[in-house]
Length: 260
Image (cartoon, rainbow, N blue to C red; front, top):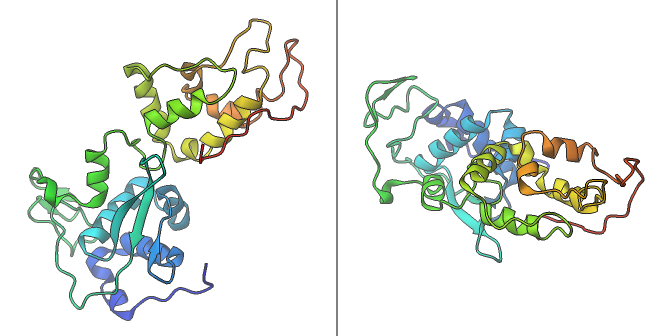
């Protein structure tokens, strides 16, 4: 990462068009961009870097796309699943067109009168957008139903595959409707998705979670999707536990990485 960031003066002159929030996100993207003007930080990274909430960051990204300050395309892994967004920061146009249809700006000057927004108040119901009018984030969230709500976590299919790759745990045949509800709730938390790989690795290294306990209990998906399970696993609650309840350090028989 370069020790300095170059911002075109023409962009600085247009801060009132988008507001300080979207500009903060834009400046952060510039910080991560390579020489070609491309980068792919996660939403959780942008949240930490800007100090803004996740919803505000996502709204800011939509504003930047609508104003043509940035362009977005999905990045896909070897399996074809979307892994993150690729952001491209083009050279500033002389006069960015006003394409904020359906996008709520944080700045009163950038009003979306078609959708009925006036400042922070909604004067009417926004019309439904046609598919060709959706920006890349909306297409990603609405068109790809397998994507987790947070946009940065695993899909339900990916999660099941990663869980079933852990030796010794109770295998998961599918995510039922009840399980999907809990899965959506967990993946809405950036901290949960950020620590998922570590938690799965710890479960694979835990003799207790793999049946080495007095009851023969083995970890299953329903247990893992409880609100506090991942935190307890990360804190070492199940590390090295044996049948008699004592603990000892163990060499992990299973190493899990985000690429698995």
